[in-house]
Picture 1 (cartoon, helix red, strand yellow):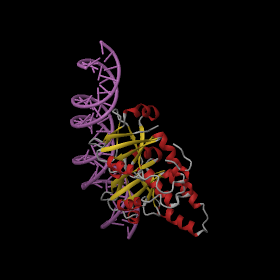
Picture 2 (spheres, rainbow over the protein chains, first blue to last red):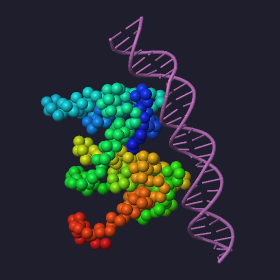
Picture 3 (cartoon, rainbow over the protein chains, first blue to last red):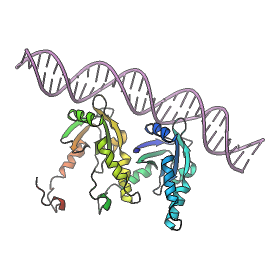
Picture 4 (tube, helix red, strand yellow):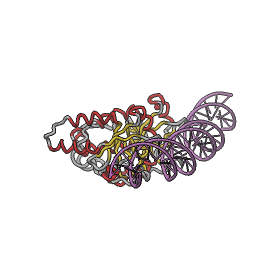
Length: 148
Length: 148
DNA sequence: AGGCATAAGTGGGAAAAAGTGGGTTTTAGT
DNA sequence: ACTAAAACCCACTTTTTCCCACTTATGCCT
């Protein structure tokens, strides 16, 4: 499971070094086979391949006649790329995905349970600002009674 | 259970010495495995790992399509880090979390039931000021009829 | 009440691991 | 066949982790 944020640097070839704490897990779980795709909020999503496959299957079984579902399918599956960790625990991010998420050098890798998010550092900061005033207004009903 | 506040000092490497009164309990409960994450009020939260895990599970099962829930997931899970007590009962606080909570040296550790809060001392003082005038204005309905 | 013993707080150093950068070979595409 | 990009590999630098030693505090026993 992924959690925690790491500030990382893409190297001159566009490679991303996966934090060491995840490497053994990823080698054991999927031999370093990962899937990168785009997220609607402007970051990338990084899944272990075994986590991604059932998500793709469920997604593609949804109705192809609902325009919003079609758009979601095109977006997620259309941007997905297989990547493999090299011996140093790095993955190459294609120029297509790099330009989608506006990644140049400074990047945040943010663990989110079964996946990680990859953010341009400045965009991540901006995203975090949204927590200011989080408790203003009505809370979503799912959070009623939620205790930390 | 955690209660009471302790004034502690981070050392030059950013390590926090857990008060001795909690150590035996933490070694027995979770072998020193703890989880540190950020709190929206500007402090950090320190959970024994067994307390944290069900909270994370409940959080990650909520809908990923609600923007406010997504923000909360990104914030809490995105900042969570596993830490382990060393032989001297200390945990290392990463520079990411230290800069989030503006921790330099003087720190307050405040017990809060199933978790502790970690505050920069000055911010803790400021937080306490907010208790002045607590009873001004309308009370939340949950406190109606509440007796101490 | 003094001193001794144990436990806690604190600091730092050395070994190991991880981050980083590039050079060379292979593959694919034109 | 030639070019360009990607995969692979190796070496160097930096960071992290683990361990040990010293100082300070606490409490117990004489």
